[in-house]
Length: 215
Image (cartoon, rainbow, N blue to C red; front, side):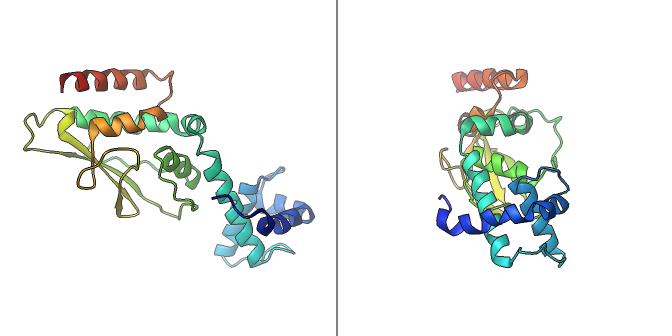
């Protein structure tokens, strides 16, 4: 939900008196709200002195405001696709390969990113946490196979399990069973994040359409 304007306006307008300090804290000649919040958050974390005028209340308001701005920005599907589409194409292609029986894929892959990477990714998945990602936040995608399915090698026999910081979750816009999504359903629910001009994305859409037709 939008942050209360009256509650945030007063401390934010005080930044005009902190321009020089903001440049020093952020390391940027033209610091954004995010630059300033990051720099001040780090100084608070390491118990370093704050610039004059920056109080705990001011910092709290600033962090809340920048967090709200980021989540509001990436509620737009096009913004998510532009911000995270290339990465999601890479992630989904690996999940798709596993769901299509490509055993040449590694058992586990680790992708390191930033807090500003996870917000558009989670928002694109329609998981609106509304909070700034914590340090060392862990987002896991697991592919499971139903060995008892009529055709265990088909994508229809594979499921995607999602975990955020060691807790299971499901996509609100995708059918789920026992806390997991059938891979064709998961692909259909998340393919909107794929860039339209990405060759790999086009190939995945064709493969998914063919698999659905067979099923």
